[in-house]
Length: 313
Image (cartoon, rainbow, N blue to C red; front, top):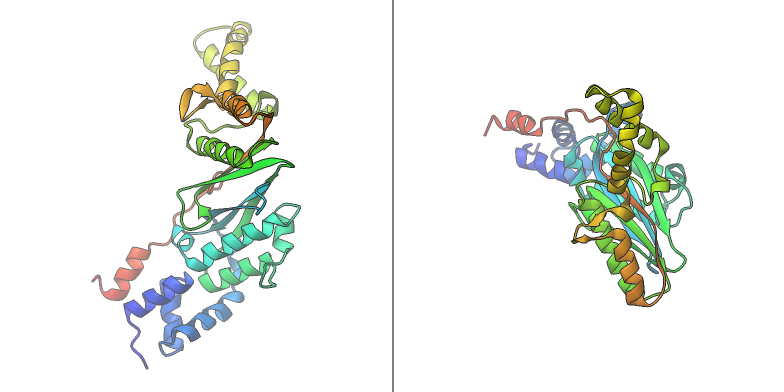
């Protein structure tokens, strides 16, 4: 039987993303044959995939795609349990493929999961097979699509982990009949702003703000004013201006443009309309930060696993 070295285990782990001990067991069962070990891991994992569904998956990737005509863009978030898996070629390819599927699907996660990839597998089966092979819980958590009839949808991926995938993704849709290349570039700059501004925008306009978020902020400011000794009726009058200021801070069109703080996003759009010689409307934006809103748990200590297998060398 071939010697099961740490290098062989590392090679199998990099090819599959499976756990160290699972890789060692697979190689042992298959006499050091890496290809046979990959098949063994998949067969072994399929029966256990359902058991992993309740494990927290807050790592992974955000993938984005723009249609060939430049008028539609999608973002999807594909989660796994550890950041290590996000660096796996198979996982990255799956995220890109799912984004490609999402371009042709009208609907959310359920519709995308039921749709088939170019290889004829449903997206749900792709995810299940990766769970089986890699040994971590995974899920297609969310998706978004923006489309314009005329104009351009732009994509920006921050902290890119590979082609078309990153840790943060932003879509921006600019509608207009002007030069699409100009609209695409301006949209990309606005997407960069949305990704990098210290206060991420919550809505496109004040009217689009979630009423629950507005009430939460009002309560916070009112409680803050009352703690200073002011009666409620006075505190409520005091916060009117503060609420207006807060709305300007979290509404995209009112935010100062990060590349030119003397200009708001609204003014940038107006200047772009003058540049292309026709009206331009910022129709919408989407911002996906990997794992936002998901409770994260401590992942496996891979360094400790390697040390235990190599005697600390």
